[in-house]
Image (cartoon, rainbow, N blue to C red; front, side, top):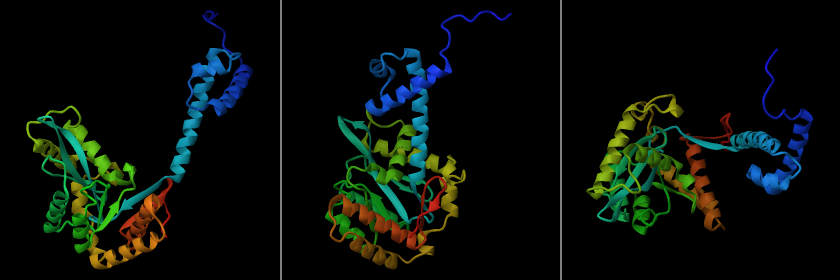
Length: 303
């Protein structure tokens, strides 16, 4: 004969069903983020154990439903050619003599290849142009340069340089860091590996840049990128075609500029920026440089 179970007897399935129904109604009123304590105040007649059990069940179901909803609507962009887009962003690497130190990170979303640039100080328009000139001298100047709206990135000198060299500027929407997610993810990855950031004391401002570059080089060479079939960034750089095998810079620049101008007619502010970005992506897609998808099944929504 099995030993008698110690403790309170379990609640019946009928009681659980009733409690779950009441909890579901209460969640609709006070929100799905509420914990069991506010639920206990709301449902005085329901035992605490049933509230905790039912809330855990309902929250799990809600999270699963939310994940499915987000996955169904998720939009992605796969860059198919090197140099079609290069993303750039500034990051704080630490402090030197009570002053913050900075680094400029560049990342190609096609290969996930990363570069660290800068002198450790806050970037200026001249600094941005110097970085772009360096890429141009090596034959690595991209068709599209993605950045946020930092003062150096949007200054007149940089705008003139980009126009003169026929580089399309893919600017983020205001207060939307996810628009430059490629650079953001690269920064987070490298800073964590290099152990840089807030509270780090450096002997020289450029020390942070050198540590970021050493980390980027190591990851480029050795880290398998699972989103790219397990290949490293170095392998992808050696294998993937460049944008100039697909399109002429002058033709792309003219079509993208015309599309941006048409898309932003009678628009201002965030609406204009969103339309401008979409026009750039549509032009990249028109030339077969990127593939835009929606949902987990990666269905193309190309126009």
